[in-house]
Length: 197
Image 1 (tube, helix red, strand yellow):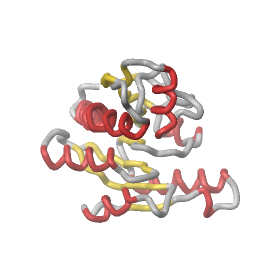
Image 2 (cartoon, one colour):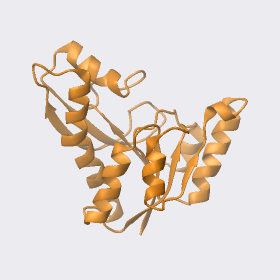
Image 3 (cartoon, helix red, strand yellow):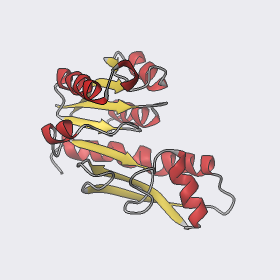
Image 4 (cartoon, one colour):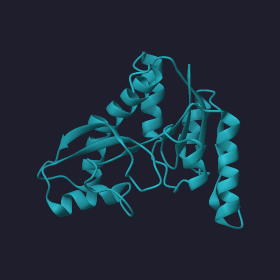
């Protein structure tokens, strides 16, 4: 049984997609052992608690400096003893010590087709704003392993989504989530859980 810890910052729609896929049998051999958020107001925490999943908040605001936060965050993750850490809309840069300790066991979902529209400053709605500003016709999402760079780890899965002429960043964001993110994140977890990666 693959033990996963899901890290989230906001609404938790990708967390919901993972929970639903576990319920429906789209992800097998997997259990969510903990959900961690850096944001006390994240709706993802409500989603986790409604399923009886252990949920915790570790916020940089609660610590005097980044080093203390990094230690507390790593300790919270360690307590869950996860086999895999899933970054599902987690807007915190992971401490290098965590990336080293869990090397090859952290994955992230990014709302674009890496290497396009990724790296520092590309997150959330900003990605979709940049896609529309550039005028590309195809965007999508990527699941990748996390390394010490920003969105530079080995790509696991990608799924393309068409950009429509009348898209706003919000409309495009929703389509990318529905057609790509919520499809490939559960798929990647299931592949890892069942030894296909």
